Length: 296
Image 1 (cartoon, rainbow, N blue to C red):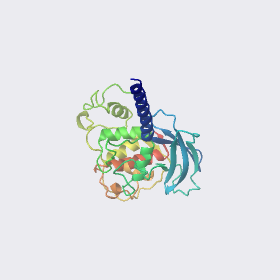
Image 2 (image 1 turned 120 degrees about the vertical axis):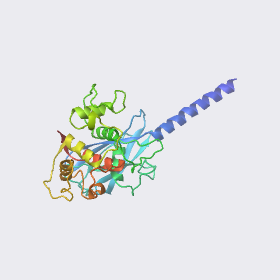
Image 3 (image 1 turned 45 degrees about the vertical axis):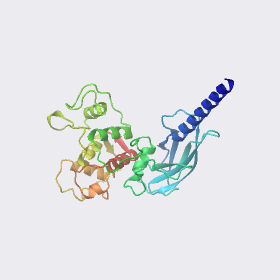
Image 4 (image 1 turned 90 degrees about the vertical axis):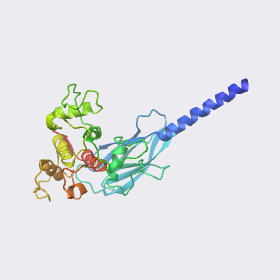
């Protein structure tokens, strides 16, 4: 009987040890960033929603591409906490506009990959933006570790993503603004709060159509109604601006703020009624997150 008890205790200890190891392996590391000056940024790495005594130690950083920095780290149970780093953007020769933050990709030194998502590679359009918002703790993806970058995104999904990424300060609105957004709908609070601020406009008969796919023109309108952007150019000679559409003014403002780029595929084709993909929406939101703006 004594031997059986000892065996049970050993099994229990091994189970706890294995659980701790698995928990540490699955702990997600994210970053926060502050611009210390026009030359320096301060980056801090932390665990996301995890209580652990493990230590994050930044081991190196380098230029990943013209607007992205790769930070390599390790997770250790021993040693000193080294989760903060100051980086000289100028020294890395990044090609960033004034008051624009770089993308950050995080790499565990024990892994060969920088992407968590099985369907996002360096060849995926806007993969830098996807990785940046993932590493900020904004994106989670699907249960099968995919992001599905080419799929469309609904109006309510976009609103939720936009508010989470930009950390927009919204009031809790109890009343229902739209007839098709019920009290028990998961997106109700975000939709109602954005509507009260004048950022969202409804459809016919007081509806919002939350499950409709969002289109290019609607995305441009939401962003431009939310922010005033600094470092604005004053061009009106962009291609396609002679095509009449209700969202032209919003698109023009975002072009002048470099939130939309003339080389973006969805702009080059200029179909403002086009359903934007998840990757395209993330890219536009990421530019807002990295760019300098003020609330209207």
